[in-house]
Image (cartoon, rainbow, N blue to C red; front, side):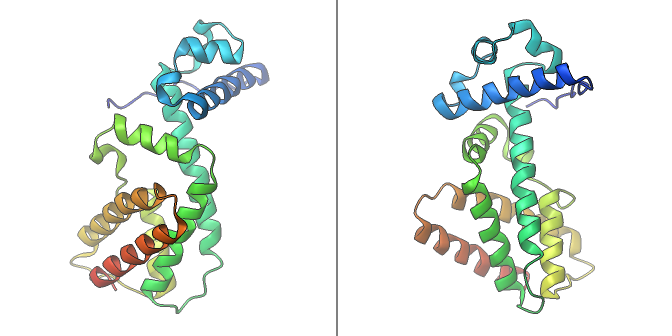
Length: 201
């Protein structure tokens, strides 16, 4: 996917309300009929606005869905950050990291549109585009986990180990999130933790 140039965010109350209506309508359509149900025409009809109004705030329907995805991902990560504050230091890398993954799984499953939005993002973007790097917010969560666990990466391998850990975690969390059976998801989370502990811990 080509990088998008975000349009300027509205500042007036009426414009903010209209942009929010567009996003809300798109989310409703996505949840009811999947990504194919989200078109500029269907968004306009659901929001009760002219189609042209959408283009004042977004490039196209993909830009609308992409904005929903970015928002949902941020909301899930905020939940994970809050969960990390409750983890006691000294548990060791495996247990600490397992709590991170479980918090991500629970927040993602509780969010009404995170799974369909993640599926859409994964289908529209290359693996490279959807996989966050070490400097991403997911990378910062990994760093926080390492700090809580008291683990220091070797200086000469720090960057490549971070890249490997964040990439692995991103892909495997997506797999766990897709699992409806909580027992199976727990088993996947355990395996992810064992894998990363063997690599880092």
